[in-house]
Length: 607
Image 1 (cartoon, rainbow, N blue to C red):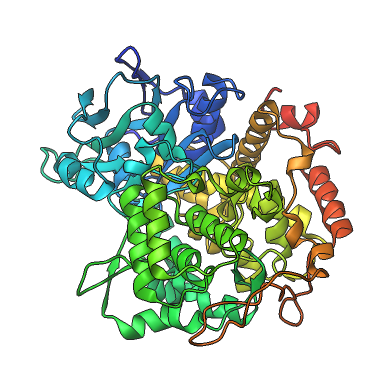
Image 2 (cartoon, helix red, strand yellow):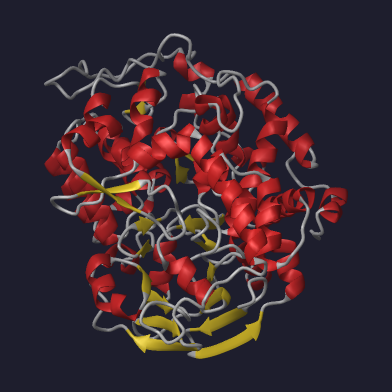
């Protein structure tokens, strides 16, 4: 099949109309696929000021030109306007869905409107159908996937999305969830699921003929080089392959980079009991891999088939809340997967609730609150910012642009601090995972405690990440890949020749387009900031009440805000403001963060 341009499918649920067209080649030339194509379609199809839960806000599923072909490139991207943040939002998702979408020759599925009754969309054998989901509505993700799974790969919402919970997400193949509240967007449309089975998939005539590179020999050579890069990178081949993202727990704790108790404290005595090493020693594990991935960074407990939470889940319901019970973390993570809840936002809002109520949450309370959130019975489901603002305690929300921060403390990872502040999604660490260079030293080493010189480096990482998301690579491929390897793979896989410099320029254009969307949605320079608690002035304050965080006593001294030695007490505001202005300069934006006309022309955009 041709791998560069395929089909774009428009489904209007209000009118029950389906329109299929050839994807515009120029559109693919400028935005590739995945995140880039999704953002461009969102920008063109909706008013940035539109209601995220209104019928005019599209849900856009996009594959990439390398989906299902290159190692670690089995992904798809879901794009919409977020009901949690009000920003543009793209989520790079794993599972089989992206590969099946690509096999079906679909570059983009654009869903608009609002159905009169619950529906799901089925794609396969060149057909697109809107089907009755009345018997699926009210079911959680595992049961829904079990029913639809015989038809293909399933991306669905649970009861949280149906209840329009703003921290709800899609769940793909009963494993992979996301952020930004995009599950609520589907719920507002009465869309329960999308199921796709591509040409050449198992059980179909023509099996094995679905995805072939344009230059098989050239692709084999390029693929071999990529696999060697992965193998030579210990973060990927030793750390993630053997332990998954839980491998980060002990290292981050040693460096005092795990935020606990709603970012009041850094470092915890319970880290060893929730580490990748502990889990691997305690349980017999089996690997779970996304298509085309040589690593297999997910693991299941062999005896129960329970998926081991990644670092995000271990942080959200364990390290963050002072909960050392791994079994409790497993149960909490399962509730999130079942209901379709973002574990980072869920754990963060539980941490905010615990601080507001001056309490420590035990296992039962954690699970009870999560179930209430999933059923749409708790104000916590609106996210930390809205929940705390309604109670007059907005300052307790550890968010940027409404999206809660994950378990990487930016006070000790200063480039990540700037990345959080400038991300178009809010506090999404995956739009530029500065933990790589600043903590792990990959793909290069940077001084994590300095903001000096980070602004120029950060925008290169952001452009590269936008590129990788658009080609459909796993976010963690950034440890080994660069624009040069992407150029080689793209040429041999699709026959499309784009130089490394041209690819990075495409990534830059995507970033600027996202900025334009957010500006038109009402965001300004004032939103490119961090919670006050993370700034230097707060670190000098004392107050609150609590006890010591010791074995057998899971309460904590809320007044202990001073970080481990060498990490400082907070980010100096003058340094942050200087770095932000430097960042705008490197981006070609004015002092208010608005892209200049010459920069937009340079990247092929118009304001």
